[in-house]
Image (cartoon, rainbow, N blue to C red):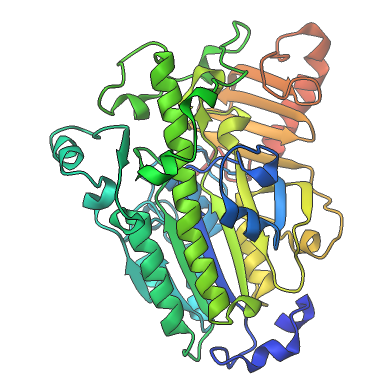
Length: 460
Ligand SMILES: [Ca+2]
């Protein structure tokens, strides 16, 4: 399969940096970004650069991560392999430990002539899958906070403050430094004779919500509302909820119970400010890509590693099986192909690997379990209407409008269930799984879940 068959103009090959015909890939991973963005119909977060990129991309309205937690989601995405009972479990997953034999996407590209650079947070650990990269760059932890007093608190506590409003330049924080590094890379790669797989692993809007004041000033706290689904219905199994332990490790967060309303609104405000901050940093990189005339020969993909609860179901953070934690932002710009169209085809993160491999004319290794969505990019209808996501014992089958979750033991026997129909209940407040009228539906979904959760699910 050759690259030109995907519609890139032949004239692109005359560009200076690319002597081969392979397109470059700019791979932007954003930590904890939920799809609450204008191009998903949200209309209140200010993200002009992401909006512009989306206008040149294919926008996936129903993209799901395979594991709603950082390390596991990333290792699964980078190998194109599903989580199992014992593989890709939590935030601290290393690809090298969980699936050492798998040829990761960057390794496949490196083996096929690409220059591969890991910048910021791509895997959870910067030294993971080291053989796949020509260069690994990470930002120092110190740059999480800008103010000396916040840095001092961080030094003496498990996590530090949950928010910071500092009147400082963008480049003080990690993502500002990251953008400058990626820009420098682009300038160097412009004169390289190899195609590149250049990554930008953005740290925000992950907690703490530390962003320059000018981004906080884009929003009025009085306009911020708690979500409509700020409730935990009795009919939902208790396994569906957690105590948002991640957030509670931060200073000034109560150790149990609901958050005070003013604190909840401060967090939502901080999340919005953090998204606007990283939007500006991504914009700097995209502007440089264009200024260097690299944009027409570069595929740009942007993804968030999982969703995030911003008070939905009275929850904060990820680590659960509601759609708010499983659904993700995903957009891909393929020059000459995409121009802001949207698809409601269901895709999973393990589909990203085979898609990018196909777009650059490479065959995916057998360890890849995802399905390329190149046909969707080419305007064809997808024949896949399902996804499977997993967090610890909870496994969710997303099938058309139905969201069915089972919590299972090591033998695969279910001990709790929930089922939502998004046609009538998009906020997932009415669990249908125990209602007699849905007995047959649950039986069929349970069977299908087992067929689709992966052949190695119980054994690896
Ligand atoms: Ca994350």
